[in-house]
Image (tube, rainbow, N blue to C red; front, side, top):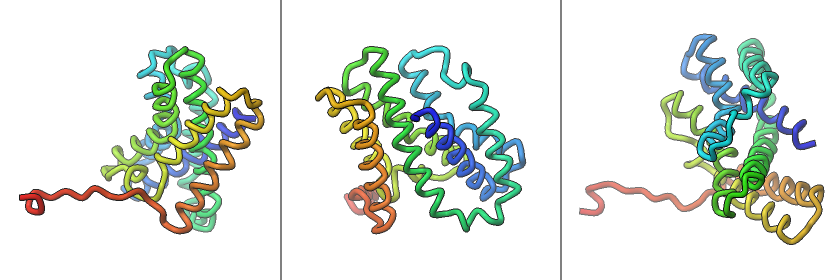
Length: 205
């Protein structure tokens, strides 16, 4: 089930990356690259940091075809994408949870300490969006707007806690997805965010 959700998630993330590239007037190749990095960048960074080689997507060419195709299809259907905005928010939230859980599992299977497992989950969950925004020359949205990275942190902690308590895999996944989706939707609906640190030299002199 998690793999199926992952396939849907990387496709949705690829399409969001393509839209971001379109806002920056990139050519078709640029759209495909940003779509690919948005969808698979988090897992790539995680595998490099953990020394988990070969990198996951190199062993699954289907992921490459899926993300690049999703990005290019977005060019064709861009005019109707605004009507699918709510659907994409839900898919993005599901993707965040799926990426986080998968990242935790990878680090867990490699025998890393708990804090490293949590960071691996967060990295997988948010780094694709960070790479997308860097490529599009803007401050990463996942670190500025309504709760996103913090949702990944909470999901990772809940997932690991339930596993340590001996809770079944299916129940653990259901709990992680339910809480992650709920928190993300609440954050979007009521614009919930963490306190912002705003620094200027003049203010502190």
